[in-house]
Amino acid sequence: MQIEVNKAWDKMNGKLKVGILGCGGIATQNHIPVWLRLKDIELVAVCDKSEERAKNTANKFRIPECYTDFSEMLEKEQLDIIDNCTPVQLHAPLSIQAMEAGCHVIVSKPMAMNERDANEMIRVAKKNNVWLYPIHNTLFNPIMEDIKSLIRNGYLGDIVGMDVTYLKKRDDSGVVNKDHWSHKLPGGIFGEILAHPIYLELAILGKLDILSVHTEKFLPYEWIKADELRVTLKGERGIGRIMISLNSPKNSALVKIYGTKMILDVNLWCLTLIKHKPMGYSIFSLGRDSLSQSLQQFKGTINVFIKTIRGKALPGHYILIPNFVNVIRNNEKPLVTAEEGKEVARVLEKITKQIDESDGLDDRH
Image: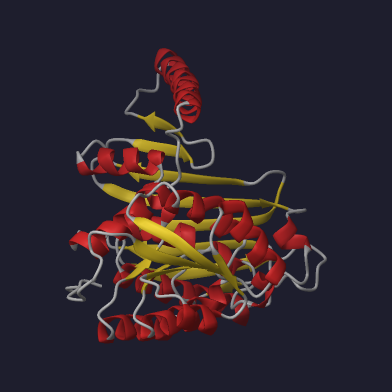
């Protein structure tokens, strides 16, 4: 969403007032710590339907006000920005309410669950001359920044394919808790997980079409629609695949990008990258390749350890939230646009619709 922000801030040289909407782990672990690092904003209020959670969050981070009613917070506080960290089914209605009140909105992924809601959010943002900014944080973590640089500089050659794998443990709280809000989403818990792999695929492969959706179910929980998902996508620059499993012995996120000159193996959780370059078929070549992979893994692990100790192995929120502030203050180019958020919603809607129409056994086209 490229708009010119003409709103005259009467305190442009002062601090922008920020309200946090939703006080779960996303807000307390990922968003609020970033806001507190910024000098040109002021966290003035939090809101959550749980009074206890709202009070605990306000006390922990020394935020002056807390609310359980979003309308009341908007009415009483002169807020410039709302950070929407609520469950995904609330992103559209609450973001729209905030923008109608004249607030800029930064919203967790996915921006919306369907294309219709995303279009309405963009319409309201334009009508009220405010910014709408989706958080696609994994795309801006340190390892993905390295990958984008390699691609821009031509090291991979032509991109021909990309695999994104997200793994959850069978006993993950979001899986075993039948009352978790994600199970009520279109596509069930996949509706909450899919946004990350979708925006990664979009960034590398371009506009996506759905070729096939496969689901299977192994877990006995009646609240789980399916626990294995395989999606095949056709992008402008290659074929994409998404795999999500709820049957893993550990949580993990993996990416493989196939180029004509190089293949990249990425562990998004460990922030390690292995480059597979051209090689021959001799025993010597195979041995050299094995040694190269081991050395890259070791070097990458050490680098991540050093960055972590120095406080530089930071998630993408630490890039995106400051960018959002600069977008508002200086009309800086947004790193993620509302149109990109809408494209995630479009693909997400198509996949989750096929999941809901499936019986968990067959190929869905």
